[in-house]
Amino acid sequence: MPLRTSKTDTAEALTLEWILHVKNFRLNLVKDHCVGCQICSLACPKEAIKHEKQPKTPGQKTRKAKVDIDLAKCNFCGICDILCPYGAITVSINREHLLSVLEKESFPQLVRDIRVDPSRLPLTNNECKEACPLSLIEVTRTLPDGKIVEDANSLTRKERFQVQTKIDIEKQRCPCCRACESKCPNGTIQINKFIQGKITINPSKCPEGCKDCLDVCPITGALYLSESDKKVRTNDMLCVYCGACKAVCPVEDALELRRTKISHTSISSGAWNKALERLTSTTDMSKELKAKGSQKAVESVGKLLVRTEE
Image (cartoon, rainbow, N blue to C red; front, side):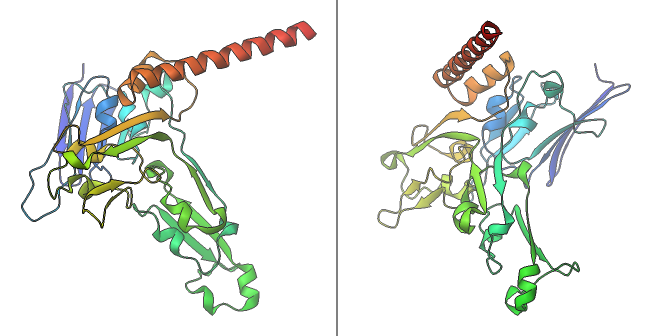
């Protein structure tokens, strides 16, 4: 048992701590990075994380759901840290980013498949950086002497061939919405979503004039207002299926969100199976288990053939 516990809730962060004899467990949630989605609360094995709708002020946009964590229930396992699509939660031990479920190999890591080829980006293209709805992309162009290129159009022909382009993406905070792909030409950035699924809005069940889901959606264009009937529509190409919209929807079945697959490192774990079932469904979890079983069968046959040939 901890010698001392603490919970600090400020405008910037929510911080939980366990102080033991030789260890200090700490969970830090950065509120600017948190979008109020459902991933952490659904995955938490202790049901320590809750989402609360915030009061709506007439004439103002709906605010994202507020996340709260019960210090009495949290055991600092780090599952919320691993699964947060936006990198808003960090769990540490003695100020080091250490997660017990990864150390024990009882939980996988998300696979954020983000590939960048700076050589494909034209010198005058600045839309690549501006395309990210979360401002996670930084493009830097430099000359051999280290001078930063502010205006590519002012360069001499020789200098243009000498420019080195660097593209930095905060991968831990990238939800892989793929908004940058269309704005970065020639395949400069290629992304595979780590969460796949389907989102559907039933306009007939939406309250008149309601835009709560659109107000809180962190990905520009994933939800949009139809010009014809002024109803909110969906764009699955950009949606990351985080559930920030679902968390504030005032009508239970007006918005349907289904996650069908989550890309992760290989693991055989009861803890992961339970989390996957809560995040997707029993059916989708069963599909993954069957796929794993089939893969193991193939590998076993391959090993048997090798031994036979020997």
